[in-house]
Amino acid sequence: MRMSAVKWSELVSAWEASGQSARSYADEHGVSEGSLRWWKGELARRNRREPTRRSPGPGRHRAHVALAKVLREGEEAPSSTEPITPPVVIAIGPARILVEHDFDARLLRAIVHALVEQP
Image 1 (cartoon, rainbow, N blue to C red):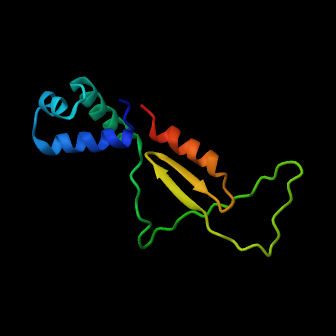
Image 2 (tube, rainbow, N blue to C red):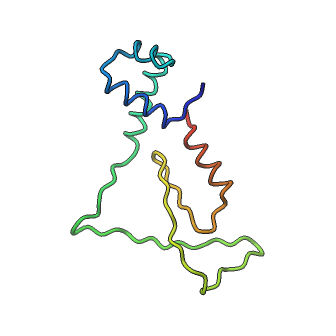
């Protein structure tokens, strides 16, 4: 059975909170001790690579970044009368996905699936 990184994270957290040995916890939950230990290390490595997010707080300013929409050949620029919908940011581990109002749902599903299913 293949589990996502999110599921392994939940399993490793529950194991650490249980106080059980890796062997007994793995046996009880139907996973191998080696996989449980490997995921504990892998999740720690992933966490170290992810920068700490800090609130801008008083006295600090956020940088503003201007973005431009790239149009494909033959695609028309949106009219200025279209409502401006702010994008949504989806965070999966260290990855950040900016989702605009006119997103491709199938592409987004594929990207999210690929990020969640990383070993």
